[in-house]
Length: 212
Ligand SMILES: [Zn+2]
Image (cartoon, rainbow, N blue to C red; front, top):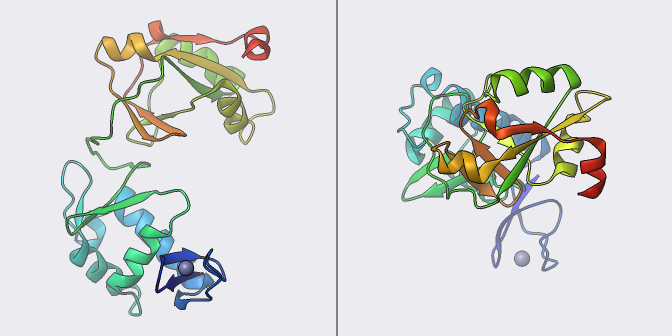
């Protein structure tokens, strides 16, 4: 659930960190319902809701809440703001009367987050996927950008949800970026990238993984 503390703003859970119970904005079920619609609206199908999105992914916040209200009559602009500001993964942001998803798009956007500064980045895959990626490069499948991990351990962990035998691919991010591959820092844990050609990729051996 999402509540509001008069002192500290919107928060998730029963109680604000300050100990105040706050005012209920969205119960558990509505948080879930509205959350799913907001993700769809800002990442995948703004057009289906009659919204125009600019090339950086921004949508007018009043138009966005009007669109939400068409699906859920109880929805309000305050609820949209509450959902964005209390999001534990900071998936969205609001600026100058507009709202956008910070990552996870399938629609065609050109995001403008700061450039990645880490020299090496990582991607976890199954054994078969890894062989293919090394040959043809790392390309986003249904997403606009590839999501990379900041350490081999994190990449390995992500891949364990999909395969029992993960491989970790290392990207020479510094060289790729020097050659014009755009990589951006969404937050300290999430880096997104344009398609990465094979020459910047290598599979880490178990020995390398242990060393890291
Ligand atoms: Zn508080």
